[in-house]
Length: 329
Ligand SMILES: NC(=O)c1ccc[n+]([C@@H]2O[C@H](COP(=O)([O-])OP(=O)(O)OC[C@H]3O[C@@H](n4cnc5c(N)ncnc54)[C@H](OP(=O)(O)O)[C@@H]3O)[C@@H](O)[C@H]2O)c1
Image (tube, protein in one colour):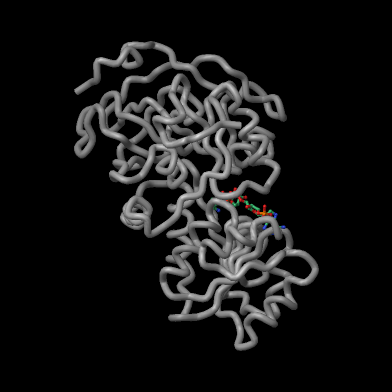
């Protein structure tokens, strides 16, 4: 079934192409607008989320690990409206609001993805909020599955103001844990609003942890790296530390959670996060929003490393108010 939307009959779609590695590597242009193949869904993207991975790819940092045939449309997470579904797809139809990971690249007006990488957006969640969730929810729930804190224990989240950290902090608080979160002092009130006790990650971090948790810390979740594990390993047992960023930490005995970005799917745990966010149980923070024409600026902000919650780009030709965005940068 297809919508009578002109974009379904378009052969090209507006997109940002990664034409070369470097700060100006994202070039506005067009890309083929693929019809959905078997098991696939095509979507008009109304809200596009920026992940730190996007800047790492654009810079060329991952060129060897993740070789790409340039020019290519990059970007992973987005939300929008289903245009058409391919053969064998059940559970989605044209007109549905969906969010997820996009195989053909999310930095575009329309995109195609495997149905297993998408979920319907529950009522109560704006399209922008839904776009903010896929990677953050997948990562937070995956690492909680790898390292489960003891009941009602004290845990630390490094980088608690970021998109993964914000969600992880809330999940831990809801599970009854005492969460100490690291962030810049400017983000300390925000961390308190998530239910965490904030500390700065500067020179006093270790002393602050000892002072706030004299009985000890059961587990640590590292979403920000920067030498965190070497500093806390005297306070937290190395096997009780999981990191999503410090891939050398396995040598110190910590758990390294490396995710293959092309293999991420919508799990039941991710769907549960969507439902809890829709019900208001979990807050989805959108720290900044940009117009589609300014998408490279959004990637540059992410690259700066101090985003709060998620950075969202409004889809091409989309009214920001329609997706729950008040103002763009
Ligand atoms: N392995 C995986 O499967 C996986 C999955 C998803 C993401 N990742 C990676 O995990 C990292 C975090 O992702 P994200 O989406 O949460 O990023 P993000 O939204 O950009 O957040 C990064 C956060 O790090 C904080 N920060 C910066 N410098 C810090 C420091 N020295 N110590 C502690 N916190 C610091 C910032 O907070 P302040 O402004 O308060 O400093 C910012 O909020 C990225 O590198 C990403 O590529 C890995």
